[in-house]
Amino acid sequence: MSPRGDGEFFGWSEITISQDVSSVDGARLQFVVLEVLDPPDVPDLTFLKLVTGEAVTPKGRTLVVEKRGMPKNEPSVPLDIVHHGDLREFFPDDHTIRIEWAGVADVNYPFPADGITIRVAMRVVVD
Image 1 (cartoon, rainbow, N blue to C red):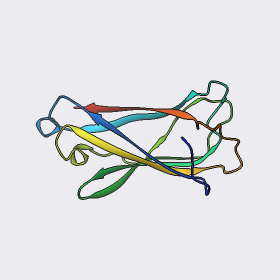
Image 2: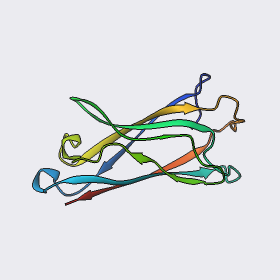
Image 3: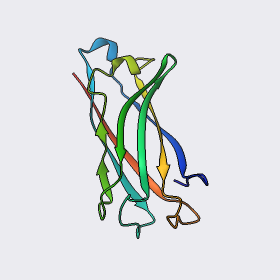
C-alpha cells in the first residue's frame, strides 16, 4: 500500500468459491481482518484513518465493511461488518465476489519507499 499524496488509497480482493451460490440457501460474511505483512517493523495499522470495503457488481456497489481508526500495537485488526445480510446477490457469476477497498491514510506517516504490504483475510460462509 502506497497512498496518494492526499492520503487516499484503493485496492481490491476477489474470492472465488467452487460451489454455485445459486444452489445454496445463503452466503454471509463472517469476518474481514487486515494484517501488516511487510515491512516487519511496522507495529500496527494506525497509519490508516479509514478503510471501507464495498461489494461491486455490474448493478452497483454496496458497503459491506468499514473501520475508522486503528488500535495501537495491533498488527492484525478485524473490520466492522456493515452488511449482515445474504451476499449471494454480490456473486454475479455465482462463484466470485469482488470487494473494492478504499480509504484514507495519514499523510504524515513515514511510509517506506516500497509501501506497506497488507493482507486481507475474509471468510464467506455458504449455508
